[in-house]
Length: 191
Image (cartoon, rainbow, N blue to C red; front, side, top):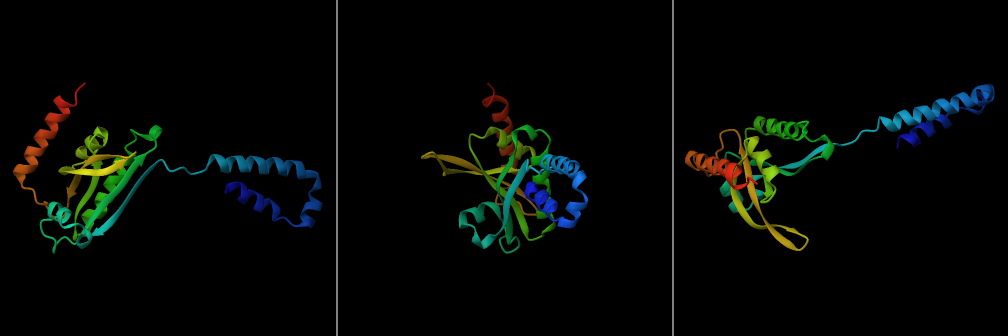
C-alpha cells in the first residue's frame, strides 16, 4: 500500500531532526501529501491477463489426447489457456493478441509441446473470431462443458498446433473447417 510506505518513510525521521526543522514542518507535510498523491496516481493496474498451464499429455483424457496429439510419445506436453481477458476500455490495443503470441512463442520453443489449446463457449462469437484470426482451429464441439446459472452450455475445443504436430486432422479436414467457418461468419452470423 503506497500510503503505508509514505507514512513509514515520514515516521522514520528522528526526534532531533524534527526539532531542528520545526519551522519547515508545514512545508514537509505538504510535500508528503503531494508525494502520496503521486504514488497513488502511479498505481499499477492489470488491464489484460492470460492464465494458462503447461499440461503433461498423460494427464489429459484419452479423447482429448486423441484429438490434439497425433504422436503422444513425441509430444509429451501441451499448453492450456484457461482464461484470457482485457479490461473493456483497453480492448483494441492488441493486448490479448500480444499475450497469446507470447505464449505461442514459448510453446514453439519447447519441441515436446505439440499444441496450444482452449475451450470457448459456443455463443462467444467475438472470442471465436479472435482465436481463428490467430490461427487456432476448431477441433470439436463438447456437449454440456460449461454450467452457468444452473444451465449447461456446449463449448468448442480450439487448438493451434506446433513443432510438426497436426493433431488427428488432415489437410482436407482443416480446409473444409476453414471454408465452413468463413461461410458461417459471412452468411450465418450476419444480422
